[in-house]
Image 1: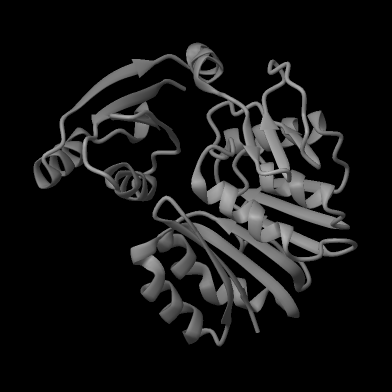
Image 2: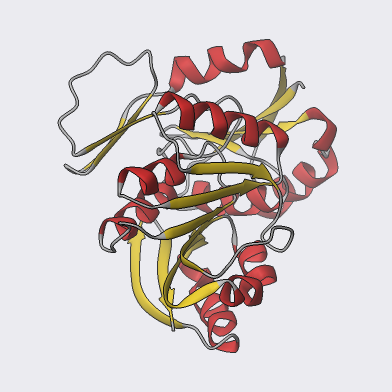
Length: 271
């Protein structure tokens, strides 16, 4: 599967965050940010030039496109993938990173076209929310697992059983590989959506996706959450807060905690 790489010139603060949110909803599932540029990736089969033209016109943004063959994808990631260190809590790195790890947890991830390298604020915010709640002996669902990085951290935190799901076949394969490379044995990865799998109510649900998917499945997520459970959500910009809280209120969940980083937010919800 070949990918389209789209390079946007960004010179306004906050523009990259807005673009990532818009592009994520349109099927783009890999992003790289530099000081004045945003790179976004999407399978060639899903690429829509007219969509980019509309964005360019509406926001007065210039862009360029190119094709990245499948066999070169890992080279692209390896040339740009630096280790991520979240305080003294967690390091996310690739196997080729030869560094001294001084954090409590160490996660090795090979992205392979899947979202979730730890570089994005939403992944880091989810991990910081996870830090504040107990996982020991609990049942967890990771909805939209991507690379499986959150599921892997959940096992390291002591979760008893983890169901990791994604609707992308490549993400499922990648999450399985990453789980194995981290010595995980309680993570069960499958290609599915939250409403397509059978399981009892769970203690913790992780959902780092985007606003539209979260709103679409909010009732289903609430239905699957135990009475004392925690639902952790992200993939949200600050301006998404009110519409998400409205959806949360509609299913009788309550906001327990919120974290913010670089115009992105993550929430912990419960009963």
